[in-house]
Image 1 (cartoon, helix red, strand yellow):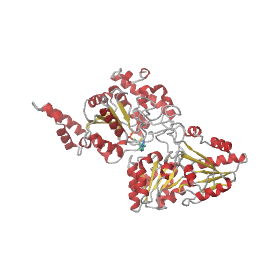
Image 2 (cartoon, rainbow, N blue to C red):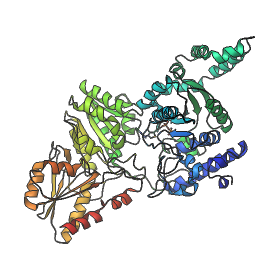
Image 3 (cartoon, rainbow, N blue to C red):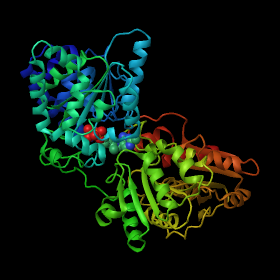
Image 4 (tube, helix red, strand yellow):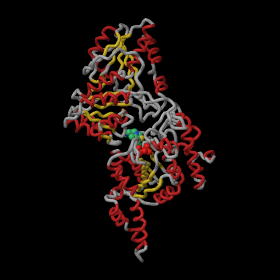
Length: 614
Ligand SMILES: Cc1ncc(C[n+]2csc(CCOP(=O)(O)OP(=O)(O)O)c2C)c(N)n1
């Protein structure tokens, strides 16, 4: 195997084209064999094999720097940069991260995980290089999906006029997680498909360079002329108009063509954009046919791509199911997603009510203000966003939604610990940042039934409402049917006189299990399901504490500014207290049960700690 000889880019540089092509297939096989066991981001990695090989062949990493947008497509890069032998540990606790991490390798030049940051970061690094009189290349690799994000467009705008040497490699596979949509996507498709333009460009170049005496000079000097001639064929040649030299489109699976175009880009001054065209999932038929299903996968069978474990209904699906039912009765309900239709459970809504469904692509900020606009004009927008991606929209929550007290329902999906995607994707800050916003109301359900009640309540409340729920399925704890939701009211689930446990969301079932265990030891816990993190039911909490004098709070949020701290701040007097929460750290990857154990947030650890302190 050629891969046996490859550990670092220097080994790659010794190969001829044929060997590199063989290596590409071996890399695909390694990724497929590994990810079919561990799960992970598959389709994007299969699509970027040749680009990664060509990048490491032509450039001189780690002196040259590459910033990978989102960073979910860096498995090949990791294998080729000294991490082949640990590749089977990817996304596992203590193993390789699923995204680039500067702490992991000198070949990872910038941490990513959230979309659309690469051009900003790369431009910053390029400007630093120039100011510090260094001499290396800086490259951003960005997908057509990530290019729809506001930050990427802001960065293009800045980089374009900067004259800074910067190479942007656009990996255009026509897919975000689902099919890419919107104006930018339409423009790229025009560039991809306008073969007549490519032919005309070649003919034009031949024509100009053959003009006697001045032709060659004219071709070199008059890039502006070429640009304007180009725009005769493609109206508004966006990238060139804003100051980038546009190269491509080039077949992103031809190592030969990629190397040639990268070599060319290396010698061009100023910002260059190379448009590569790839197939997401390339080389694995089920992924090519269904790239969205194979964007991020659990363990699967290599023969046909079928999942090893059948997918169970999760919180996202439960939310989507209820929303479809509510929208049937209420035509004012509209749903917005930022490129996460499947991930947030909105597929059925999108199919059933296409005129009331809006995929804004990777534009959380725009999505939130779009919702504010719809709300002020009389609609009832619901916008599910993963907790960590909602961090992007803090000002939109403050300035556009809450200041005007607009009735927008924000479904904060993947709140709490998300597990293997690691620190960029943990939803451990939302209770803290949502708590800081005046007029924001924040709820979290203990199970699907309560989620459905909360969703209906939120949509009809006429107020800004956030409902946070975790990744995964509801607990099997046998809760009695939930009482109706009232603004700022908790739910007393169990009476006791020895301590008061206040828990929220997913952690309510943990509190009940802990209380059951404590009861076996003769310790009687009162358990309050907070339901609302904001406004808090301080009346219910203080009434219970007057009896027990011992407060325990349990939440799947950071300790800083979360449920426990907020309750403590609002109490009229001090009580003995234990706050169970995640520490003030970025929590790395691992499975959810492993991380809960590590941070003392599993039932057994909570039980033991309370028993010790009682
Ligand atoms: C701010 C933010 N929102 C949403 C996501 C979820 N997400 C991860 S990858 C992806 C699609 C990226 O598409 P593209 O850039 O074209 O890369 P591809 O996977 O197609 O190679 C999305 C929406 C994210 N990582 N960051």
